[in-house]
Length: 498
Image 1 (cartoon, helix red, strand yellow):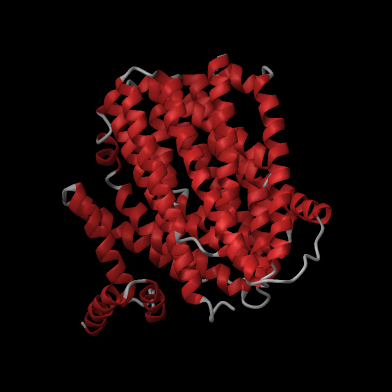
Image 2: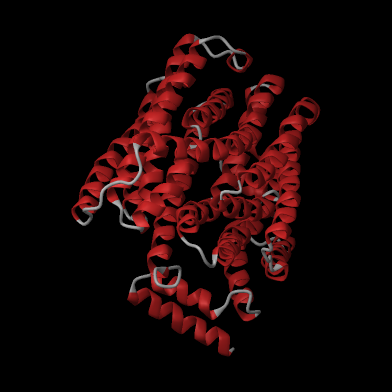
């Protein structure tokens, strides 16, 4: 299945990558604009709201978007449209109940919202954001399950452009935190959800015409399947999201909005660098759930490619962190150390994400939970210890320690399931870009030239050392248009001869 559909898988992953890349670029543009037009106090407060909504959305979806990928991926692979519709209906019912419960939780006073002094108006805004975001995540998972992901970048471009333009307009009108939250967080998710809903309806209509089989799964059985798989995914995801977002909230309560803004911007940059891994794991889950042979090999390739996509770029930024942050304003350059510490969390995060995805596809929910639990628990505990003392640096340290703890547990899991990790390849991909970046920074090369040079020289070096193989290149070539792929192939053949 993997070999026969390699091009479809590759293009599916590529479209998801473009979607996340567009989202990351638009996010960076947004923060670049907002840091110039508003104060760090507003940025810090908005950061806290984003962190809170991310955690609440994790509660609302009950892990259903991940669970539905597993079952829909199998239904689409078997071309059973009726079963797919049953799982679709069950997923919307469960997510709706999750949204309702979360909204009731938001309305009632609680410690988290008191910590950040959220008033009634912001509570209503948060409810709107959580609802739109949860629905958007579910619809995105449905599209990913079908592997027909070409629509995702288009939808993301439309939604991202609209929310940035509206946000700038409201900032200039003095809309404050409430206006920016509505325009940037709610409008983007709501518009994306509407467009994906229209596409999903067309998708299921086209699949139904090609399938006359009756569903062998009832709504009750489908709901039970999704709920069991969802809870198994939900608890680790909740632990992970709390571990990621709680640092922002604790920092906001302990140090105020300015330190929060500095840390949140650094965390946003690191999350943007993970788009390659996120896209590969997203497309990987329905594939891993539908195949029987070659799962471990496929999971290793997602880890390896996640490394190849993200680590060279992260290494190039590591030595130019101050220059990157300084683009947002001189006060944000103080987050240089925080950003560098957070960047060190990226390699272990890539590895543990791939392994967690694999064991979840097997149905080994306890192992998946263990990886996320031992990643999230140290982060959560250390936030309360280190943040009051060291501020944003303490939050970054807590975050990175959690990633390393999760890595240790994931390595133990690989030994139990007999999965091979080729550490030599990963070490090369990590140290070569770091060495090149260090040399260029030491001789004081301009940061723009230094970043691009680090990336290009790193990939050329890795290709010559066979850390990137000819097979890897051909996989990329299969995805690209013919005119572009021919030029790349000719260039790489010259490099190899030299």
